[in-house]
Image 1 (cartoon, rainbow, N blue to C red):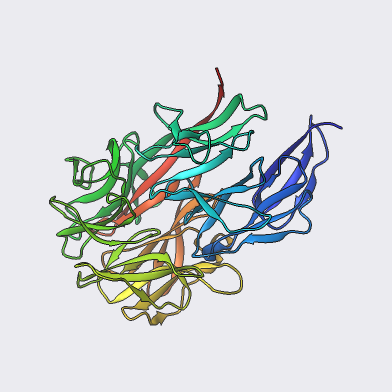
Image 2 (image 1 turned 135 degrees about the vertical axis):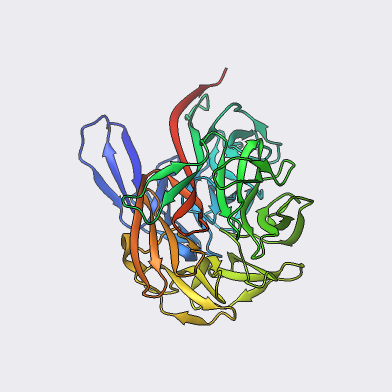
Length: 475
């Protein structure tokens, strides 16, 4: 019997005989990320659940007799499931479904019975578990002390991790040969730049503000339009920087070896809130727009960006809320957070600069997983019906981001479905009509979007990459 190649495409898995040619055979219709057990008798696969989070299933070799071993929880996504030789299933959990940009941790579960348990816990990124053939060790990608991913090896789960790759670029997606002597992985060369896209001109033109080689993302413009805050890895760690809107006069605002993300100016422009793990746990921090020592507001497992209330007294963020993501509010002075009631799952909040109205990305709690923009007031009450974005890309604004224009009359929205073209849309908040501004193509992802002061252009954090396959042999 010839060897067989087994691959997974989104929501459908096929088996193709090898060597080619051969007749493909559909193995799985519902679910993705399918992997076979080492003996070929079982499969593990993911059932995507949009904002509610993903479920993990195990079944027979042909996908039959599937049973759920992990239920959706807190809006977390399950990626990269893989069997180990001793029967465990390893996987990673994250809030994101695109790129390798956001925090993730590695867990495992015994499908024969038991609950999931952490293997690599970090406020940063631990991705792509690859159990060693002897069933004792683990190779994975992580960034415990750098801004970029490296490959790490643990001879056993009790042993300390050893770094096995160095150099420029991110190493990810390791796979190990059956004899354990050869490793193959992906080496990503990242391009993370800040670009300007005109809104009123046709066609829209993308103009680089930074060159892409310094790791710049998360742009946000100050209320007066004088300074641009963003995150950058140009000094080693990922820190908050500021510059003029054209990228000149760039200077660091925070320091140390932390990974800072998602900065946002206060309404008066005097402070910047951001997400960081600089205390050892993920949380929300505030720093003066002109510098100074950052101050922790709260520890929180945030997902996505932050927004300030119009009076500058509170910060709103998204985090897990039991059955899916929800919105939370915390006083800038500190204290406990409060849940903001929303009629749907909610993420990526953005407060209007001219009214007590907040936009957010919404997913219905039942029915099709349609992601859309919705609006609530400061008390969490809906203030208008969602727009017509539910038809965009077939599933609305997948992994969407929203940003208000300075006059509060328009919204910019990002749609970036996994393995599909990323696009930017403009919504008229009065008519709730959408118009596509630009397609960014398959590959580039957006992290951070903000309007210029005059509302004629957008400033966007653009994450792109090229990649190579790297083969490593054990000496």
